[in-house]
Image (cartoon, rainbow, N blue to C red; front, side, top):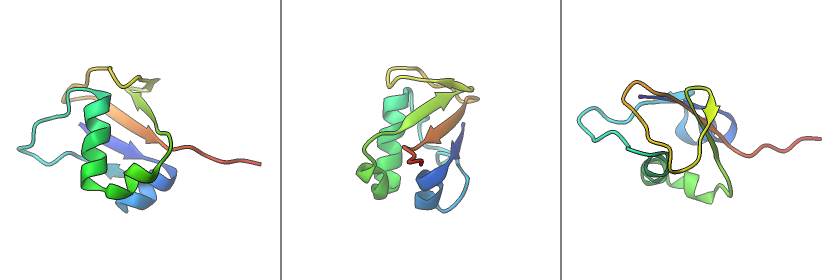
Length: 80
């Protein structure tokens, strides 16, 4: 599972992609992935919203994840 990070999410982790530790159980759902990110990187808990795309499609918290999925973490953005 590859997790691609954008915007502030990339800044929090310090790189543009993240892989759950080998040997750890793969998060089963988007919700579990979000919790894992908050546990590994507490700054994620400060984000008010976070969009997640699984294999290039936006996904709700209940969407199941597989070992070969590509996940994008898309934090809120401000524009002007």
